[in-house]
Image (cartoon, rainbow, N blue to C red):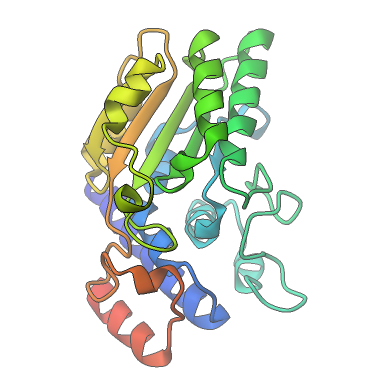
Length: 261
């Protein structure tokens, strides 16, 4: 697991550089889900052969820098493509567009959509008798969307045990604490009531993340409630709402990279 921790640290450095070079927002959202994505792409998902790969969908697509950086670290996305992030006439948009690069499975940005697209893919795989799996990452604020709960009912009814969802529970959405804006607790009990196999973990503990993905769901779809910290890895960004939007200046970049070294 030490190797995965080192990879996650390098991915966080890439995110800091992307945010600085683009002067774009959402670095806090990207940093919070790095450990989950690192574990998925380097330990859990089947990516070879590519035409039979498992599918990952980043439904909280404002954290696109995290997915781009993981795809780059995994060798799926090239450096030239990465350097064109969030630039005029560039290569990669701030929210995901599936026509831009290999590994971007779904165009996303409107919260609550990626979850149900993934659900449909998992249903298609199951109906076709193939063993591909679908993984989706949603935000905690996103889980306030009614479409998520409609999909949750559908997924359990169909017994989609090839479908796993991670909720990036950093408790900071666009305008404040998710629990205060529209409380969804007790979240684990709610998912269980909807017929899902629900697990709560530390979303920065790579061993716990790996074990959660490997846990038998007894024929049910799986929801992993990953308790995370917005801006994880950079002390002055951690658990700060401003880093949902704030841009990375030269000074911020220097301080962040010093910490990550």
